[in-house]
Image (tube, rainbow over all chains, first blue to last red):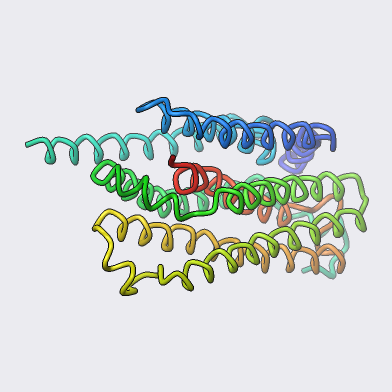
Length: 104
Length: 206
């Protein structure tokens, strides 16, 4: 029964209003507009970086608000953090290995 | 189990465990798409000019429109959960239906996009495509595999949300038991996140 009570507590924390979601949606749409607008400008090597930074900001908003990570327990955030960390590690290792092979 | 009284039905419920299980599944999806993004970056690094040229074939307006559709569908999905929490059952079903309609719109756009490419002879293994430089063949190979796999996820999501609509209307999903709807939502938002990255990487190389 105690567990049930905890669950109820967690659930009440989960209750976002409609307004928060609509605000996040507006931010996501605006950021999409920014990505499209910025894509036309040539920053050289920074062009891809800009697009990826904006995509990451959008992802952060979706993860924290739409996917409720902000109101989940720390365990969930640690889970997602570790998963993303390992994805980034595999990216860096594979990519540095590949560019090393190409250069030699 | 669903026919039991409320108090009894709650006995073995573990909503946190259910959501954590869903997240674990989403991590496997992350690895699936992550591998493809690694492939993409390696080939883009190898053929930067061909990727630029090939990306010009893609319609940025359709891509942007589809991004807006998918982001909006993520909003309606999130709203449907708030609605069920507030005991607004009909409104929740309406938002879920809206999500499916938007997903359908996304797929219809994809259909027209792909058929237009097919008409131009650009599809995996076509003579027109094979006559192009290696980098462009790889670009379109990745384009079809990655957006195709993403499209498959959109289709699965539509079926999943349709089942959730049925569950909501039959009372399996209620204002105090909606973890199924939450899990379907998590899946849907992940599909949205993947598109958030696919969109600039394929449509916005100028």
